[in-house]
Image 1 (tube, rainbow, N blue to C red):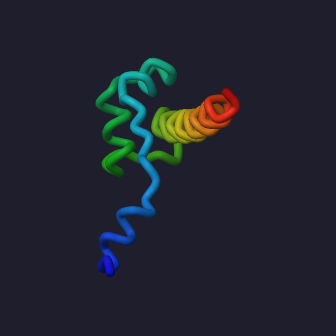
Image 2 (image 1 turned 90 degrees about the horizontal axis):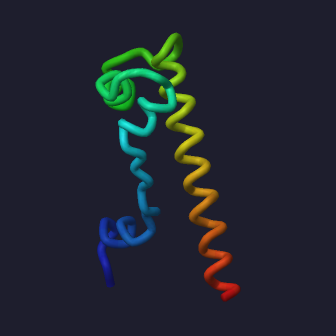
Length: 77
């Protein structure tokens, strides 16, 4: 029988990594700001930091939805 750690690792969903350059381009800020918001070194509740947080969330949600849709289309074919 597998140990708890191995069982957990098998259940983890693949992580979607949106490049900082993509988020920065959409928001109109530097990649550095995006990385600072992601690591928690910069406030994500107001100003450009808030925009970065919202865009990152939207990109992740949208990409996840796109992947699910592609999986359905591939199963149909």
